[in-house]
Length: 413
Image (tube, rainbow, N blue to C red; front, side, top):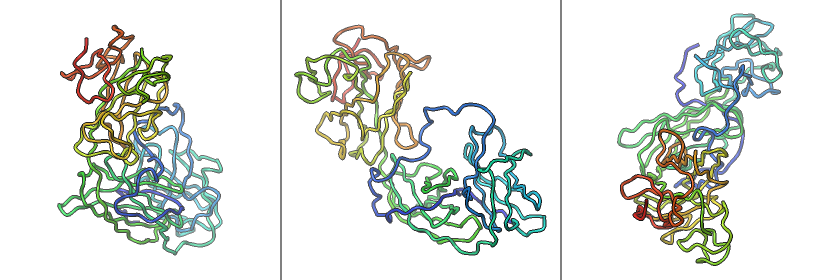
């Protein structure tokens, strides 16, 4: 069988959503992306456990099956695995042509046994590295006929994630897709994703795209039997480049910044209340250092607090926010400071704060967390300076808190 280039191929399955619009729909209408920054949870070590994801277990496969999608957890170490389908007619090789972590897309090779492809009414067991994996979820059962019908695509959507674009494609059956993004200036970027099976699978550009660019997208499709589906062509524009900076952190509050009693009546504004102080009074200040307003709902920026109890706070879902210059979630002004209450409690030491937009990290600050720390952390050394802030020199120090002020602090020790 002739090999075909598979840069950008993935496996996906049936669903139905609305058709795409231009400009891209608000990301608040789209589920969170798969595979964002490194996960907080770590998969336990041990021998990999395999699953056949497509063809789906419990459904018959065509005798002319070409593509097999399988997944292993934890991720196998080393070179791409060798897979085989073992049946009554003998063994059929499945050459791994794409690997994303523990997920593999394999091309079923021509059979040398009694059947031209897979034999009808036969149950094949998946074999990895010479070991037969005799479990129901690792079997491929064929029907009686070959699949000669092209797949039907039900919908395609394009949307913004951070300052990048991603796509969803839905079909009447499991399919394989490749694609690219181009512009009139010669840009040509492949679309890639893990070959995931399910109701929704997402493609994204292999490299970053220029901001505010008009681009065209082309997708080529085929089903698991190799029947070619429709070619999809779309046009869209890319989002603006995000530039957001962590400016100030209060990991140990000494005042009622949440305004449980008194104060300015607005949580986390410059006028603290006189009520009981708790961890709910901790806050983080961010500054939009870009040249355009940010729609927080659309940008999908997340604040990661990595300490003994890691948390992720989507800015669109922060417990409380204060915009220093009158902005809003739909329009966070250029140069404006945003103060927010993160989820969970912030540690005094051993704290790393990271800002993520999609798959790109915007900023990172380490407080009392090793050789790369920007500040030692701990308890405030002065009752009036409870904020760990970026100073005018760019260093971090104990400073008088200035929530809502984007200017680097000058009253520091």
